[in-house]
Every structure is written in C-alpha cells, then in structure tokens.
Image (cartoon, rainbow, N blue to C red; front, side):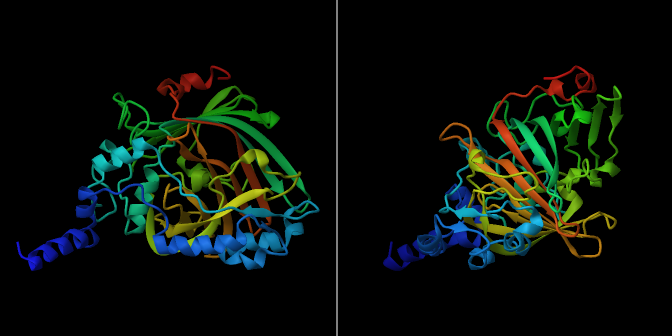
Length: 422
C-alpha cells in the first residue's frame, strides 16, 4: 500500500468518529467522558492555584460571582436579609474532581447506547428495555433530558431527610423529618435483575415511599408515588393521614401545590420530578458554576433561621445549560433553567420563572459520592431552595443515605400505607 493510501486510511480512522459520533461510539466507546477537555482543565487548574482552599464570603464574593447564579451571589452580599449568623455566609473552594459513574452504568451504556435516535416528537423508542446513558455525547436539550431520566440512584435507595422551612426575616423555621425509599423498575444498571424487573404488570417506571416522623401533626403519615412508563399516564399517589386515619388519593393537579408551606412543589424533587415528555428542552450551551459535588454534610454548619448552609465546599463544574418549557400553557412556571452536571446528569442548580416571566426561585442541589470505593454513586445529600419574590427559603439535609440496596415492590401498595413504621 502506498504512503498516500496509508495516510488517507489513518485520516479516516481519526476523523470518522468526529463527523459520525455513533460510529466513534461503536468503535471505541471511550468512557467515562469528562466535563472538561484537556485545554479547558488546564485553565481550571491554573485558576485553582489562586483560589483552591480560599474562603468566600461577603468580602470576596464579587471576585468569584461569575461562577454563581446572580441570585445566590446576592445572598452572600446581603447575608442579614437571609438570616445569616454573625459571621455571615461563607464557603470554600475545592479543586475540581471528576465524578466517575459505576461500572454497571458504563457497561449498560456500551451495550445499549450505540445508534439510539429520538423520534421527531422527542420520544426515545423502546426506552423501557434499555439502560445506561442513552446519549453519552448529547447534542440537544432533549437528549440531555433523557440522560437525566435514566439516572437510577443505584436502582434502589433509601435516605433519612431533615427539612427546614425558613422565614429569614424573623429567623424562624419549621422542621420536618422523613424516611424515603426509591425503587427503579426499569433502566437498572447496578443491581440484578437488569435492565428491568421481570414482573411489572402495571408498567411502573419508578416508585417512591415516604414515612414522615415530624412535624408532630404529620407523625406516622405515609405516602407513595408511582411513575409509569407510559408518558401519557399520570402518576398515582396515595397518602395515609395518621391524624385522620384515612387514605387519600393525591390528584395530579396537586403536583404544583406548595408542599406544606415550603417553596417546593411536588415536581421540584431532584430539580424535576415528572414525565420527561411533558417539557420542551432547549440547549443553550455550557456555563461554569461553583457546585457542591463532593460535600461531606457532617462538616456543614447553620443556626436557626439561616437560609444557606455554611462551610460548604464548591468546585468549578462545566455544566450544561438547558431551558425547560412545560407544554401546559397554564403551568405554574413559565420556564425552568437547568444547570446539569455533564458527568452525572444530575441537576446541580435550577432557576424558575413565574407565569409572567419574572425570575422567581433558585435551587441548589448538593451531592456526594455514596457507596464502596470503586463503585460509588454520586447522590443528592442536601439542597438549598429560595423564593426571591417573597424572601423565603428552605434547606434539606439527608442524614443517612444508602444506595444500591434491595427495595421490595410490596412497599408501594395501599395495604402497606396502614401497616405502621418501617
């Protein structure tokens, strides 16, 4: 073979994956995929030589405000308005550290992701039979949304959560505690059976069970929610009110109601907790933000009425920016903006706009690696949520998290709502 032909073949081997991502995926499937390219990471490391380990507070916030949502930078500038303790609000900058997903997720991605295409209406044909990350190199907001949808939190998980509903002006708060269990029936990557549970006559995608311990009027109240594979089918949710000793079905219209006076609605869990096809997605590009992705919640600090945890550690993260529009013209938010981790496809920050298009809320999700070394799952361990129109806020902290556990399908039945504590 002539030198010219050899050179031509080498050129094709290098360039085909660039022009045809699916071809490159089949040939090499180079995983995991980092949030930064080599040149981008060198810029970050140079910046970290100055900033890693530095404490950020009201005096220094302006020097890093380009890496925070403007609303939250404002909270650090005016801490008294948001119930800060005498020392104000502060956090530390830590070096960027890649998040590596589990081997099960990458094995499923290699098996299923090649050649997947969205239908014109945004559907992913046959999605209930596959797992992993359907679009390792997404090129649209809808592909990113499907990657988010395929997160299974270890296939089964449980956590004990404490939530603080905060009125910063009066430095008062209402505290609630609840246990929760999640079971993913499809898209399973970490725990057998994979990729789906074999017996699923109702066509369930994900189920969640909550047991509330406080406040006192909700003690022993329990609730479960069923999300279906069929995107046209509304969730089924039932609650056992311990005070009244009766079961009530939760209407789908209640999903946009405030949850017990907080700034959250039912659709807000994880940044979005609804059917993916109920939204339209527009990828706006990327934006570097300071994100708490490796946070030990035991070192965080707060006093009563404080709207932001202190002693957080945030790192530069090259997030995807996706604008999200609900297809219901009467939906409570005119727009959400997701800032999505490109390595985990968890929503790290999200902004909401009211029906008039005015900025309304901003939430921050805090994550950490959970599980044994070498097979850890980056999971939500806390959150801040703030209403900037009425100057109200909330925090929740997961005080215990277990991922990759066995969760019985029998838990998610009306019968079990009345059985008592688990």
